[in-house]
Image (tube, rainbow, N blue to C red; front, side, top):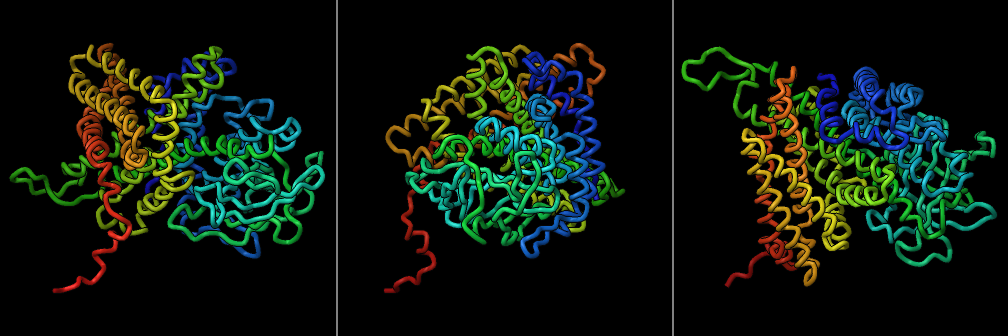
Length: 605
């Protein structure tokens, strides 16, 4: 069984040379970042390997158990959570005034990757604390901030995001949970499903952030409000009181992430309703919840990246150890490790190239979270805000879809042994599969990218990012040794620009046609933005090699990996263009009845 080992060298490279952590350290409140970044990476890697990895397999095999409304997490999870909370990992990016460490958001890139690479089932719990903290910090009253945030930061309490109902999955306009005013609070009634860590035994209290409707609320998404609904009531001094009317009526039995309890919660099942407190203004709940949702979507992209890297590590280790077959050269007789086989090398390179591109894009995007929030120039804050809004669906959608492919390829390296649970690689494949579904399916991310991010602003943000990519292409052309990379990247950027314009033009006359291939368009953005990151890496590497850097082998490998990315991944852009430009009309060419014609008996003459 492979042990997770954090890719610290590549993480350092991306943080410093691609994402620009040194520039982030110049932002107000981030001045000490460079002094602690190395120690944080090392300590996080040690925690991931030493504490989270050993219980990853246990979490998958044991799963969570439910009895009489109570959920018991797998062996070791409760103890690991206490260590995680005591070490201060939950409060990494939270302002110091609330008990956090006040570090920049970019540090969530590598730390989230490590937690999820080591144990995705566990990592889902504390991940939601950060979203709850941010939502209350930005939208809650001063009293709510003081009452709820410090204990969420310390990990003494955990947070949830309660959106989905049996009849309301992604269509939150169908939410039916009710909130009836009663004095200084509200009575919440209804049912929520698929609630991650909605009930567990790892912390003394759970703070549910719940979407519900007031009696006079308008129909649709404009009539939804956000409420804080604690598992146990909390008095003005922070002391826990009686159990609130929130009951876990069951947990799901899932394909993967079995260490994570996915709960069905009933509010108000025992009486008048669970006591809840309105966050912000009435009927603006969905707007507030999107704060948590966007943070969660970014985190899920990084979560998938962690799973993919773990699968790659496992496959690489196996390929070095598994002796099978002989060299294809004539006269070869001795059996050899399968890493010598050309097709295994192709699979390993495919995984490595995609992972490095995904990591760079995720961390680069995380850097924009810091610039949008802390840069003193409003114009620059606005630019980064637009960039991260464009990239959120790409990071969530492309990284997750890509990571499933990586995990599948890793299983393929194992051959038949990969299909056997004992090797552990099957768990990675099962665990990662959920990432394209929760927090908005890939189809929803594609619609978001096309509708809200491309069409709504007439393509101005997309054009600005593409223009920046073109500048990187010009930089590449200054290095003769990077000519093949420059040629491939230039063509890819031109394709992205052409397809973006095509979608924008067609949206004016036929929205269905514009949306029909929104997922291929999202993937086109992903492979091109990934190529952009790899191009940046190649430029830095060429400079370091020319300077005879002591780590020249690392930089040579980076350039070789970038060339592979260009020929095997970036080249997919032409295929996506064909799907979108030539194939969008084909998507809707059949009537609904036509899908069943092959199952109907023909009328013979």
